[in-house]
Length: 484
Ligand SMILES: [Zn+2]
Ligand SMILES: [Zn+2]
Image (cartoon, protein in one colour):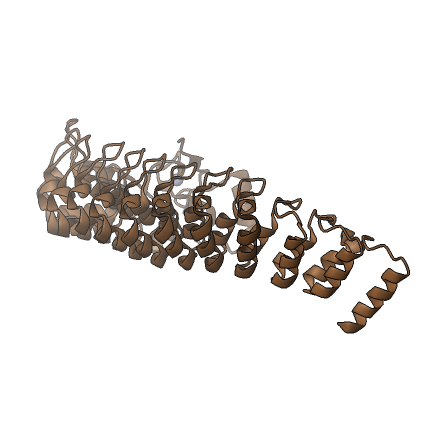
C-alpha cells in the first residue's frame, strides 16, 4: 500500500540496497512482483534492481508474477526486457508456471512479447503445453494451440508422452477436447511403451475421456503397445466394462485383441471372472471365444479351471461350439472342471454339454480324474448323471469306482464327527498308523488324542506338534508322516 511505498522510497533515499536478498534469497523485486505491486516493482527497477535476479530456487520476479497471476507487474517486467526464457532450478520458465495454473493473461502477454520462449521446456523436455494438458489449463492450452501450434507435438523425454497423452492420463476433459480440435493427429503418437492416449484413458478408467477420443480419433483404438495390447485389452484387464462397451461400439474388431502372450481379451475376462466384459466381447466378436492361448486352452477351459460358472453360461449363450471345444491336448472343459473340483461348473456342463463327459484322456473320463483328485462333489454329480462312467476302464484297466475305493480316508474323530469321511481323501503330507494301517488327516492328528477327544490344552497340542508325535486314535501307536 501507500505506507509501504513511502517507507521504501525513504529507504532507497537513504541508500538501501535494492538487490539485498531476504530469507531463501528472495529479492525485494520478487516480493513486489508476487504481491502484484506494480508501483513498488517499478520504483525498485528505476532505482537499479536487476530484473532477472534469482532466489535460492533459481526463481525470478517474472516467475513470481506468473505464479500469482499479476499480469500488470508481469507486463511491466517483460517490457523491461526480463528474460522469459530463464528456467528455475526445477527447470520451469515463467510461461510453464503460468500454464500450470491456467493464467491465460500472462500467457497472452508472453505470446505478444516473445512467443519463442514458450517452446523452452523443462529438464525432462516437458513443454508448457504438456503441463497445461496435465492440469487441464484449457484457456492457456487454447492460446498455445492457436499461436504456437507445433508445441502440441513436443513429447516429454523420459517417457515420450505427448500433451494429448497427459490430458488423457489425467482426465483433463476440456484440454483433450482442445487437442482433438487442433492436433487430432497427436492422439496416435505412442509413448515409450507404445501406448496412445486412449489406451491410457481406458487403463485409468476414464469413461468420458474414452468416449470423447473414441468418437473423434477412433483410429487410435487400433494402435498396439509393445505387448500387443490395445485399449480394449487394457480395459478388459482392468475390468472397466463401461469403457469396453464404448470401444466395442466405435471399433468392434479391436475387441478381439490377442496380446504377445497370445492371451485374448476373452481369455482374460474368462480367467478373471469379469463377466460384464466377457458379455461385451462375446457380443462384439463371438469367434474370439474359440481361440487358443499360448498353452492351447480356450476361454471356456480357463473359466472351468477357475470355477467361473457365470463365464461358462455367457460363452454358451454366444457360442456353444466354444464351450465344448477341448484344449489343444484334447482335454475337455468337463475334465478340467472335475480335476479342479469345480462342482458348479460340472453341474452346468452336465445340463448344457453332456456329450463332452464321454471324452477321455488316456482312457480317463471326468469321473476318473474326480476320483483320483478326491473331488467327491464332482464325482457324485458325474456318476449320478452318467452311471456308466463309474464302471468305464481307462488304459490301465482301472475304473473310477476302483480309484475311489483305493483312496485313503481319514479315520479321525473330527472328520467322523462332521461326516466328512467320504469327502476328505488323504494323499500326501498326512499320517498313517504303522500297526493298524489307518490314515489320519493333519487336523485330526493335531487335535485328537488317543482318548478320542479334542485336546483341551492347546499347549499340549502345540508341544506334540513341535515333536511331531501323534498317536493313533484306534490302537495308540505313534503315527508316521506319509512321504510326499
Ligand atoms: Zn481327519
Ligand atoms: Zn493304529
